[in-house]
Image 1 (cartoon, rainbow, N blue to C red):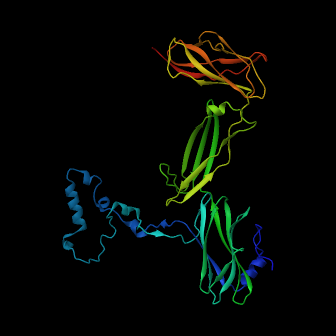
Image 2 (image 1 turned 90 degrees about the vertical axis):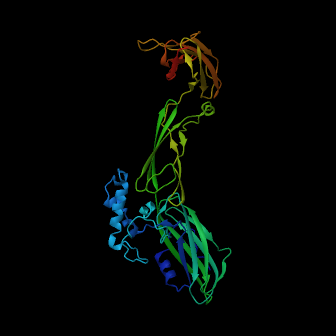
Image 3 (image 1 turned 180 degrees about the horizontal axis):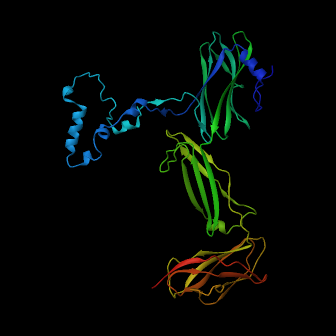
Length: 425
């Protein structure tokens, strides 16, 4: 006899499903989602109030004579005709009074178990307790059970006892198991539970049952990348449809938004290594969270790409500038020249180009006006120092450091301006 289990993603045909349901089955599946309980507010507790907010002015208890206000409030709540408290008083005249500040939350301290699958979000772990019950007066034998999650794109096996079937489920008995699935797709999902068993008459029967639920997106993430001189700026906006409470960041339910800003820089080792042609991947953005009662979730974005930039065969950059610079005293600027091609380049001349404006430069080269750099091998780099001197106090700019390829007779773009602070001795 051919096995009724199929590996396809498609639902059983209406005819076959109807035929299976019309059989008089001894077994039936019961499914309960295993999730943390929730706090259930007490509607009656929402009506509670503090009598001071009703009968007293705003500054009554902070005025010159707060005891008078307290006595007045006591006389309202306990009039003279009922001053003598009677044990077992059932008038409930103060049942709506707040006896503790925490009573304003309207939480009686009870936890409520979920009565349905509830809201299921992308990035969470779907956990379900499944019980197959024998409600007949006969024993079911050789029970092969299979549980699967079916989505629009795939079918994922969660449990399969075909190779070692449950030997028997007695009358009134049951067989329980737990399945888990990391939710990675949005939209409609179906938990497919099937059983193949022998009933009391020895007839081999097939029982399929389907439990449908939908997966929603807990948050939307938008990113923007901007190229700056020292790397990249990554803007990230997270918009919530799920209540998170992981301190110090709280993103409220129903559209709460939190913005992030990161500055990405290459390490010194990465800067000297050649970049693969066309590579613009900066990485991925990963978000983890916990809900009100601690249930975890995790999402990861697609690859985040940098803004396309024109590739350079030779790169010149400043590595180190002294933190303290004094006027009219020489200082060294450490520079690095990197060959980003697969051939030897050079030699080069490094010098300070004249200012394009009418203003005189306040930071000049000290000593030889041109540095001669040797040949640079493929994908290699060399570091060198340029001696400079500042002639003016305050915030100044090192501008116009330019490189010239001697053999190719080619000028490269000047190094971006470097701001320094010049102090007096």
